[in-house]
Length: 310
Ligand SMILES: C[S@@+](CC[C@H](N)C(=O)[O-])C[C@H]1O[C@@H](n2cnc3c(N)ncnc32)[C@H](O)[C@@H]1O
Image 1 (cartoon, helix red, strand yellow):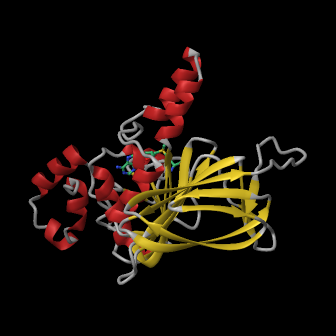
Image 2 (image 1 turned 180 degrees about the vertical axis):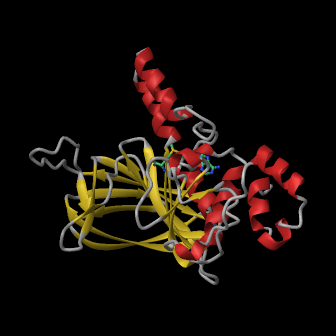
C-alpha cells in the first residue's frame, strides 16, 4: 500500500525538511498542503475504532479515510502505518470491511490482527449476503428491492461509502481464521447483519473452530447478574467452521424447552440441563440443526421462541 506523499513528508525530521530550498518548499506546500503534524499513538487509548465515520467513540482512537468525519487519525484501514504492532486490546470495525475491495479484505484483516496484543479482540459487523438475497426472494415490490440494493451496495454518498465485498457467516469465519484470529463467534443482528468477535490467535493452539449462530438463533442477551442466554426459533442452525478436521466438544445448557439436534454425525434429544456434545468436525462447514419439540409463548415477545440456551 503506497504511503501518501504528505504522510511521508510528515515523517521526515523537521531539520531535514528545512534543507529543502525555501522556493521549492513553498511550491510543495501550495500543491500538496502542509505535512501533517507527527501522530503520537501513545497519546491515544489502546482501543481502536476503524472506519469511524460519524460514530466517533470516546475512549477509542477513531480512524477514518476522511478528514470531514473528524477522526483522531486520518488513515487507510488497509495500511495503518502510524500505529504500532501488538499495542491494542480491542479493534472495532463496524460496517467497514464490506467497503474494501475483495482482494483487500485479507490485507486489512491481517493489518488489524497486527495491531492487536496477543489475545486482543476484534469486533466487527458486516451485511449478511444470504439474508439479503433471501429478502429479495421473499418480497415482490420494487420499493423493497430498491431498499435492499441500498443495503447490498452501500449509501454511495462519497468515496469510501460503496460496498465492494460481500460476506456469509462461513466466508467471514474463514477470512478471520486465515488472518490469524481464533474463538470466532458470529450472530445475526436485525435479521441482516453479521456481528461478532474473534481474538488474536496465540501460537500452539489447535485448529480454530468458529461458532456461527445462523438463521433461527437470536442475539445473546445479558442479565444484570452477569448471566447470558440465547433464544432460538422452532428451527435453528449452528454452523461450526473448522480449519481442519478435529474432535470438538460443544457444551450447551438448555434452559427452557426440549430440542432434537441433528448433524455432524449425531441425532440427540436434549432436555433442560447441561449437555456436552462430542463431535468429529470435518474441515470447513459443519451444520447442526436444532428443532424444538414444542414452541414457547412469552407475553409481549413477537418472536417465535422454541428454546433457550444458557
Ligand atoms: C458505513 S460507514 C461506517 C461508519 C461507522 N463505523 C458506523 O458504524 O457508523 C463506513 C466508513 O468507512 C470509511 N472508510 C471507507 N473505506 C475506508 C478505508 N479504506 N480506510 C478508512 N476508512 C474507510 C468511510 O469514510 C466511512 O466513514
